Length: 222
Image 1: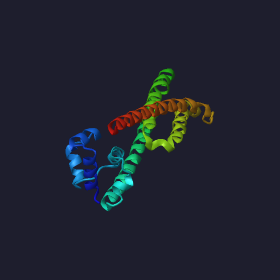
Image 2: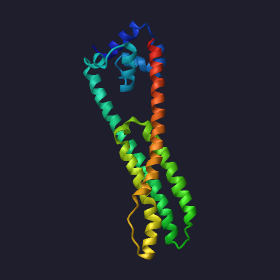
Image 3: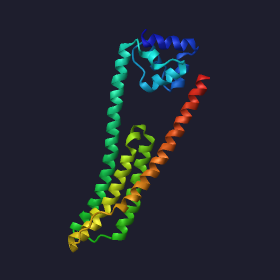
Image 4: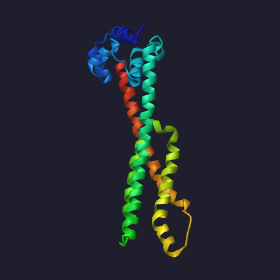
């Protein structure tokens, strides 16, 4: 049986109109109509919501409709590509801000200007980098796509925190005095802690939103 007919029969069995179903799923009535007439297919999120609402397994909904299965495969691939792009953008944003901070130091230095060490440190190491890390790590905590890679991002943020002062003040001092030192691993800790705090807050917000959605769905099912 085509999924459109199955969705229509399941909706009618629950004595729901298309308008009522659309309101519960937060879509338009025309979208519901398109699903039931096989003019378009529900995405995976909507399909799961329909499965829960109608008490039907995903297998029951899609197994006899080859076109729906193909649509889900394409949708899943598209979602994965969007997730990869989102991750790349997140890392690129941080690296761009980090690089600009370093360029501002060396640009002023090469032009013969005087770098106010305390002012620069307060602005970059205690404001710009912490705020950027907190905001991006909060986003990472809220996004399930990062679940298996969050610990890597903790190390990433920690490493960038360690390299920022090393690539500015330490390197400038080495150029003038000839004293070369390796980066201090202990300077990773602020970045790791800041990122952990952001990810923790993001995870809490995500779980709270998921609980609200489950409660709403249970209320609709009742």
